[in-house]
Length: 121
Image (cartoon, rainbow, N blue to C red; front, top):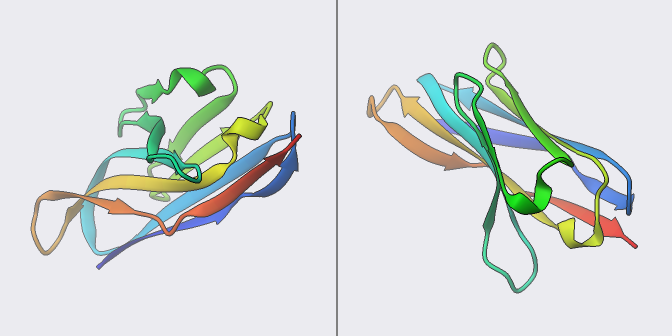
């Protein structure tokens, strides 16, 4: 069984910073890409950023220059450092990871439990 456990998030004023963490645990061989997505009320879930096992990153245009994704492969953890936050960044943030599980020996996508980020104006 694989679990992604998120931490961080909360309420911050516009212009402030927050850091999200997501740690994978359980029985698996390896993790390929990891990423962060978000879903605002009444909107579809959207990509925020992804990072490969080798460290290559990809960002949504709306967060470029303000948000940084990173990972610690030794800890099976992905981070999202969010700076210069705007009210439109308010959403539930979800981490995602492609995990090669012991049971299937295939990569399967897993999601974290979600964490609320609220940016006040």
